[in-house]
Amino acid sequence: METLETTATADALTARVAALLSANRPTAARHLMSAVRRLAPPSPRIGELAARVALAEGALDQALGELNTAVAQFPGDASLRKCRADTLLRNGDLQAALADAAEAVILDRSDPASKALLGILLLEVGRPQDAASCLREALATEPTNPSFHQGLAAAQEAFGDVDAALATLQAGIAAQPYHVELRNTAVLTSLRRRDFAAAYQFADAARAFGVADACCFGMMGHALSSMGRHKEATDAYSEAFKLGPHDPYVRHLVAASGIVPSASRAPIEYVRTVFNGYADRFELHLVSLGYRIPGVIRAALLQHPTIVTGKRLGPVLDLGCGTGLVAVVLSDLPIGPFVGVDLSPRMLEAATAKQIYAELHEADLLNLLAETATSWPLVIAADVLIYFGALDQVLTAVHAALAPGGWFIFSLEELLPHFDGTVPGNGNWALGWQGRYSHAFAYAATAAEAAGFDIRALEHQTVRFEADAPVAGIFAVLQRAQHDA
Image (cartoon, rainbow, N blue to C red; front, side, top):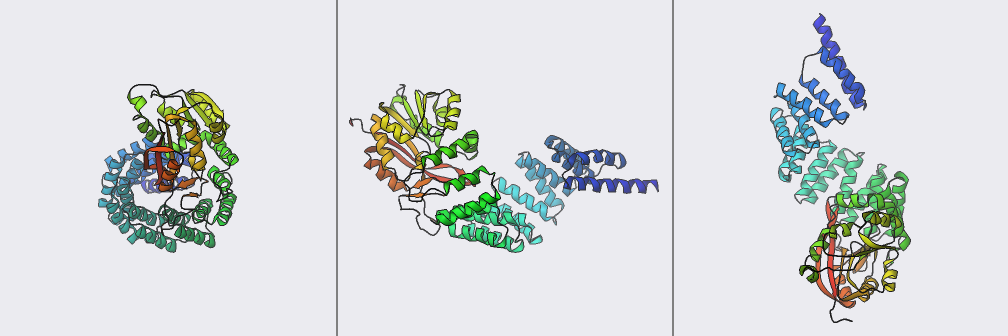
């Protein structure tokens, strides 16, 4: 009789631990776990709960230790394997997580959660077809599970079947119409496809259903802006701001929506305001997006005749220098001294701290170019001309400031057609949803030649990644002719 009462008490405490974890009270759950272990012998359930408590307190290593001990004691328990697979995934050990997830499926073929986890891990290791197979099986068992719909759609998009991915998301929305993430994923998938009409339709349906959040309204604004419906985009951004007033990205979108679509460049005060607010997180954010342009500039300069012969190239004018990220990447080359110019005093403060620049100027680059008395052998502009629509004025100004034989290296975002084949803007350039301009490849070439440049290189490049999709760009190396005095 005493044993039965002890067991009942242990079961009650175990249930209470699970309830405390669900209520996000890990410290209280940990104290109860000690009592559970005094009352009951080791079991798969206790081992898993102990690991969940450790995870809730951020102790990943302790959680893995608990699970390793429990799996060693109960190797045939599928739930423990699944829990350890999830924990290993959080720890970045994909192969070990994959092995545990596969074992969990073998041990319990009726568990859809194990199949879904195996599918997600297969997707992570680059096996989207196999991932889709697992996720289809999971979804067949639980056809209303939104996470399974999202996982299968991600796998389908990964192997290139975007139509199937959108159909999967639509089925998920039909089954779970109040699930915001499913709707937002459908919007984002359409945006990545450049199907802005479909993206708007998904976002507008969420709005009509009353489940649109700040993210949804922000993406709706992106879609509308990309279709040239700028007034409606402004309204969508305003709604996003109401729902997420403290989100710096939403504030950026609201500010960007105020730019006149036909304006040939972004207003100076807008650029200054955006980058003053962006300075503290600028470099970390760009690194997280896989920003490639500084490395591409470095590779181009390694081919410069002056550097190839071992001589020093300079001085260097860094237009829109920002925090000095490009100068850092180039600082070990025989290049310099560096002179930087930027509109944002906050960005210039960060550049000053790097102690790379001989001079830093808070100024509009067109004004500085007009007033400079230096004939520059090298001018660089990394992701700066994206704040200009028409390029003729800035290219002419740089050409005039270059020494004969001088190089101008810069990057642009490339103007691409929409999913339906239409080209936004005037065909040469278009104002984008983030307040940046994109340019047609052919226009970049003709504008460079019209300004008097020789084109040394003009190539398609991936600038960075946004929403897991590459941002198409143009990379240019232009030269003022040697005989041009």
